[in-house]
Structure formats: structure tokens, C-alpha cells
Image 1 (tube, rainbow, N blue to C red):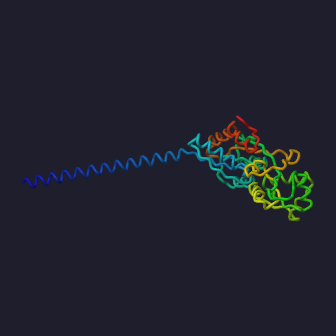
Image 2: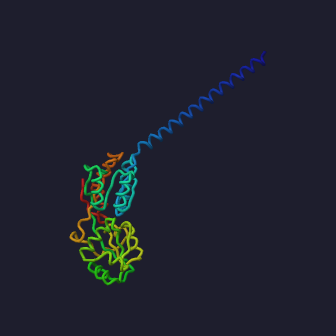
Image 3: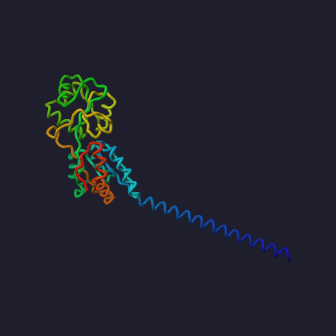
Length: 282
């Protein structure tokens, strides 16, 4: 009889242990589930702002993004840098974009006409200068746009410029017109090379594969290139960078907030450091 009672006690104790283990496992699973839910909610709360911006803004915007994200932990900035014409086409083809900053009015005007931007948010953010830069290894001795004209006509230099669908290329075309230079004839003569955005032109000058190139003074600063001359307004007009939030943005408030930040004194100081001229300040 004593043996039977002892056996029953052992079985009862084993059952209690199994029940306790089951409850502990359930509690652990519940805790893991709660933690996973918290992580999911944190991820959901992070707004990713996609910014399409002219390639000439690469260094400044990447620097400003570090400051902005540190002060706004719920925001992640993602950039797409390229020529303004390429970015315009991507937006028209349905690419996700919250904020667009162009290196010229033409591309922004086109998007506005197509209903792609929130016109109430459009501003002229910055001004830049079109710069003539000479490669360090060039023996051309070019010191001005007048020198550039003479050497191009003589056919004794190789010069890099932007494609016709790139703002810096469009500004270059105006400079050629100002100096009565025939771009087609120069290209046929083999004295011109092209880049699909201003960074490609800058690289050709930096690497010394050409004698000179026309870029923005901000890109010259970033690439540590000496500017030999800048174009006056009558040569190619003002180089204005308009910005606007996209009408189809899913993060309108956050995009507006970042655009507001780009107009602050702190952001303006970063822009000015590389040669931009802030036009809108708050």
C-alpha cells in the first residue's frame, strides 16, 4: 500500500512539473511575440523620404542627411542622384519620389505642367555658377572662357561637357552660343567629349583625360579642382535649383519638414561652404 501511495505522489509531482514547464514556455513565446511586435511597430513608425536630387548636390545633401537623421530618428533619407533630366524621366515613369531638387528650372517646369509636384511647396532653393576648370596636367594654359574659345577654334585641346539633356550641358550650349561656337562642328573636329551628368564631366577633368571641362563651381570644390573662370549671367542665365514635394508623395509632411530644414541657417552654411548661394532661408 505504501508503495502505491509513493508511486501516486511521484506521478502527481511529475504532472505539476510538466504543467509548470508548459506555462514557462508559453510565457517565453508570448514575450518573444511582444518583442517582435514592438520591433515591427518601430519599423513601421520610420518614414523613408526618397529625395531625387541633381548630381551636383551629392556631397552636401549626404552631409546634411547625417545631421537631420540624428535629430529625427523617425526619418530615413534615401537619395537618388543623377542628371535632372534623367530624374525627371524616372518620376514621369512612376518612380517613388517624395522630394525633387533640380539643377535647372526646365525639368521642374515640365513636372509641374504634368501635375507631378505640389506647386504650393515649390521654391527656388539655391544658385550655382557654371565654372571652367582645367586639368592639372594640361599644358593648354587656359585661364578664361575667351582662352577656351581660342583653343577650341584652333582644335588643339580636348574638352569635356555635359550631354544636351543635362542642365550643365544646356548651360554650356548657351555659353557656346554666346561665343559663336558651333558645337556640332567642334564635335566633328574631335575636340569635345561628353558626360551623362556633371559628375562624369568632373571625373574626366580630375583624371586628366581632357584638358578642361565646364562644370559647376560646387563640383569643382568637391573634386578639389581650381576654377579658372565662371560664367556671367548674360552668358548662360542664372543657375537656379528649384525644389518641390511631389504630389504623389506618401510622406508629404515629412518631405516638407526636410525641405524646411534645407532652408535653415545651419543648412545654408553647408551649402555656402562648397559654393552654393542659398536663395530661401528660414
